[in-house]
Amino acid sequence: MKLKVDLHVHTKYSHDGFMGVSEVARGAKEAGLDAVAVTDHNTCEAVSDAVRAGKRAGVLVIPGIEVNSKHGDILGLGVTEVIEHGMSAKDTVSKIHALGGVAVAAHPYSLVFHPSGVRGEVKSAGFDAIEVFNSRTYFSNGMAFRVAKSRGIPMVASSDAHLVGEIGNSYSVVDCACDVSSILDEVRAGRTEVVCGLTGIGSIMGWYWQRFRRVFR
Image 1: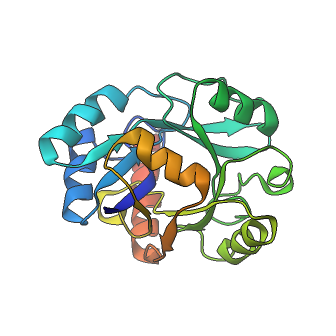
Image 2 (image 1 turned 90 degrees about the vertical axis):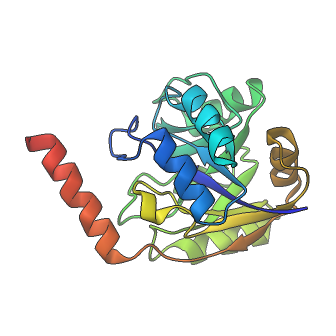
């Protein structure tokens, strides 16, 4: 069956996220998704609660993490264990693989809203897939797509949602059973379609405002 899957979403357990796990699950369901990956920055604290919330909402939650490596941000899909941040991209990818996960280069060429793209390491670190479209990356998705296509690296698209209205703005489509291992196998094999849409600038400005309030309240 064809599944709509958003592989990059943050909860309030990320330093810059503002959604509870129930909001993520309900938001994914309302967006018409079949599955959503919870990928908080350098923590898996939300994962177990998010999986339970997903079951209640009728949407599959894929465990994950976004690791801030020395060379940029890397998604570890299927990972339930915290991975040390600050390692090289190659060592981070190796650790994700050792834990049975899928390593995805997140917004690799972004210099605007995500200045922590892996850029120079994309071609050498051993990534399983490249995030060729990130809804919050306005100017560099094309470069990610071209690199993935030229090197035959599997492609995914995701929202990188930090607010509930952003969930599902971009997503990947896979044709398989609705379980974590089947979805990740499809990503590894490159059997994905990407559906792309940008998050509005108003939402991003609202997110910056919430971050400002969090720091100074």
